[in-house]
Length: 574
Ligand code: SF4
Image (cartoon, rainbow, N blue to C red):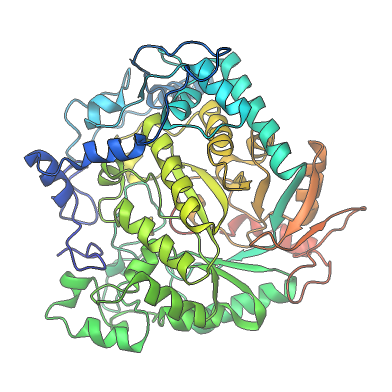
């Protein structure tokens, strides 16, 4: 079994040969694709039926609404849009567009095209943006506050256009509806949290094709003769970073890390993993002595990072999976143990797109959709608040985005523990997906705005929607606050993930910056706790600093001289 692919129940989750053959994780044949090829079980069809069960087509319920339209398919527009924007920018700057031929050993998808991209044809997706709904009816339902269907969401995300490109006038109508809903649900406050990103390690063998945060774990071994730009922190080093940040006034420590082969839940887990005949290939395990730096155990890192009262936001579903690999333990066992060690809430990253045919392409080494949902339910079962995310703008289409939203909404119906939803626009520049020519770019600004807006309208059971300035940048991040978002992320004393994927926005954001930006768009700046239970409206003149952290006294997090050097500051995953 290849590293990182064993499920908690011991099943092999290896995925299909849908992506480039030089994928870091190696083997790519998988159960799901084999099942689909055989036609047995027909899980995709079952998925579709489950996702539309109980959904009432709109059009008949209100005489004011337009009649339901015939079934039609919307043209996925992201690929072509991203390509055109990039080329247009290059042309404007007088730069030649880059010829991105396949890297040696790469097997491109059959029928892969660069011009006039229709990703559904390339990837042979079963889920397509096909609806029996009309844009007008979907918009009417959104305005009325009805619980939206997947078809409604597809109409709103595509603006119902049957030709490439988003209809600007219709897009504005969707944004208006979302902004109005935001005002009804949370008012004019824009929240942010004083936090530190302390990622423990970049060593990871999972090989997700959208990620450039990781470094192949073999490079971290004592006898490796290859250099790497990555890092691993010991528990003591994590503790020191947290203590410094606590003194500065932070409330939260966010920690999302690579799946280091020497990482185990605790000493007992080390023993179990070491007992396999071939731990490296069977359970992605090598003992800490093999590496330059020992990351310690998950329990040790939790204790270190929750030191002195910091709120620890960590252990994604994928990390929980890594923390029980090779055992009969359940996700709930791991989350309970980690909670006892200091874990306070869970980041719902590693979600990417919660549709397996997309995961099979972009992250075949990762847990599948059901496993992600199981892990999140386990976190909720032990009382941990959690966030949920979507990472969009790569190979997926609008039907996948809509299905993802439905699965998150259902999860929230079952748990009620999701504090906020975080749309994450794919930052493509230095990722394998882009460098191997699988995608031509990320989402357009219009797609980003619609993703935020439809998230607000569809997720009627999640109060907060985040605008990530790390992904969107300041100007577009601010714009998202009028598209349905009400949270503006955190100060992030360190940010690695997005910077390493080529994004340029990953750096420190001061309270003064936040206050100035939020007031400039006519909203109310509010410092919050991670779970939104504690809030403080920020008033008066600068300088402003945090007050909710255990050591916070209103002093700015960084001195002016330190702020000048935060360009190198730097999170894993998505
Ligand atoms: S997204 Fe996470 S699991 Fe996947 S390669 Fe990157 S660090 Fe590893």
